[in-house]
Image (cartoon, rainbow, N blue to C red):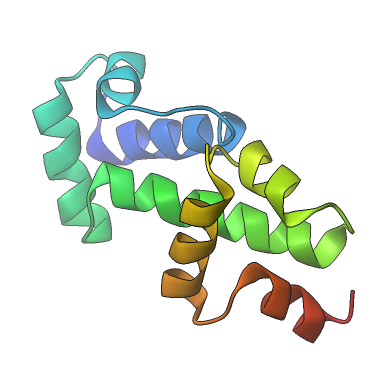
Length: 109
């Protein structure tokens, strides 16, 4: 498998399983490479670790849900794989510069 194909497969797997607890070991097993090799490929391609990439994907999905639905923030946090609403809110604010409530207010929902 070539690097692009490996990364494409991993990105699709992450998107399809965004609400779960995704580990580097699980992701590496999906494409039959070592966790260390997967980390190297991610750093080269995305300039971030696998865990950082997964977190960003979860937060982007949460942002879309905030804009598209009127679901509670705690439910959205759970849907995208955060166990605690407080850690979700901290991560969201770190990534986007606003809280989930502020983001929703600015979206018009």
